[in-house]
Amino acid sequence: MNVLSRLRRARKALISAGAAVALAAGLQTGISTPSQAAASLPCDIYASGGTPCVAAHSTTRALYASYNGSLYQVRRSSDNTTRNIGVLSAGGYANAAAQDSFCSGTTCVITVIYDQSGRGNNLTQAPGGGAAGGPDNLAVATAAPTMIGGHKAYGVYVAPGTGYRNDHTSGIATGDQAQGMYAVFDGTHYNGGCCFDYGNAETSNNDTGNGHMEAIYFGNIKVWGYGAGNGPWIMADLENGLFSGVNQHYNAGDPTINHRYLTAIVKGEPNHWAIRGGNAQSGGVSTFYSGVRPNVSGYNPMHKEGAIILGIGGDNSKSSAGTFYEGVMTSGYPSDATESSVQAGIVAAGYSTSSGGGAGGSLTPGSSISLRATTSGYTDRYVRHFDDKAITSVINSSSSDLDKNDATWIVHSGLASGSCVSFESRNYPGDYLRHSNYELYRQHNDGSSLFASDATFCPQTGKSGQGTSLASYNYPDRFIRHYDNTVYVASNGGSHDFDSSSSWADDVSWVVSQPWV
Ligand code: AHR
Ligand code: AHR
Image (tube, rainbow, N blue to C red):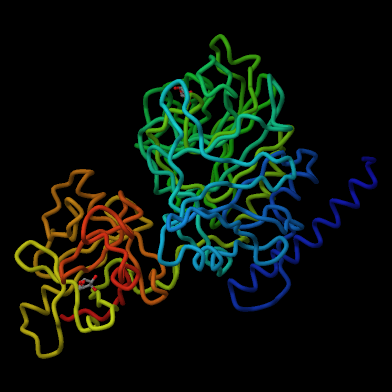
């Protein structure tokens, strides 16, 4: 393409993308003033910077102003059929309602994350590799609800064991070729397992040696490199090592960074690479490392192979956890200025947890609430503790003080994840609602990570379309459910009687109501 037509194309992209950003800003504020942002959608910006996207993945929005295709595919368990989820309009947000209706009354997993770049670099279920067998698990499609630009959408929730990959790509950097990458993650969802990555890896699913990967890593594993504070950190997975700076181990320049919505960047070119990051909801991105390649054999020159991974290490190590909303890989080394424009566009897109499916607003940490059943015939019953079990009881204004106290819960930011919630007993301070063997109990917080996970629930739109459903943090396809007036975390169909599909959607949908005391 000659310079003039490239400029024309870039200008056209900027104009139409500017309109999309203005639309997003208008939706966010409710005012339809023209946007101040000169930014456009990420891949339009990378293209105008001369470093085009060669892979573009997102379950929440289009990454090109002109993109009007499918973002991802879901498969439902009821009949194993699949459905592509597209955008609401060209260059727009995901059509989450299409997923909700297709998955209503059943559970869905994400089977494909489509590549928007036109190169066919789709991500699908990762096969086994040198470190762990496969195929890996697929993400539960409803496990990472979010709002974006005032619209509901879903991210890719990676529980340990989950992974996506493409070993047969087109246009991705190989050898010592330059590339850039950014991703938006949930900075509060991570762990110390290897390795929640997005980026360039081996085509063989095996560890083929130093320098055979160049991917963004996010989490708090300290086996290789780490940075300031307790983590999590953005690092580069360059194979046989996560790098927080020029060499492995401690690098003070790489800060602990845990914004709820996090922009993470890693890029590399001959004998030079960088780590950058920032808050995907506001401000810019900062540079945490920019300098030469590690001073260890194999990393200079690099030996990139050009496969793409998400949620796993290069050899399919899959003990890691995280949440992915969007990310791209480019051809060429993007300038810091290009990345600043991309970051401005991410901020303008408006990621937010508020009114997360109509649930978040009333589940504000610090507030006291009650949880009312919505199943016909049971709508006068509330979740309460009785001895140490959780059951439902009929509660009304003439109930005893004891019953009212037992049916009142204090909302906390989730003990295991700030994007979810935990429920503390009103009259037994320090006791929380937690599951054990899938049954719910009121128990004292023993400070263990198991307790924190068992006591954390992630709100989303009620499965019946009414109220709020509360997914178990560590069993995200199980939801708080009443069955025979006892409370469980239940899947929609399964081996226990309380997993019964009959009236499941109603039984897992709760109205968050006023506290009784
Ligand atoms: O570099 C860290 C990890 O080490 C890689 O992701 C994996 O391939 C190897 O186990
Ligand atoms: O929890 C009360 C009822 O018990 C539920 O609605 C039903 O699933 C079960 O029969």
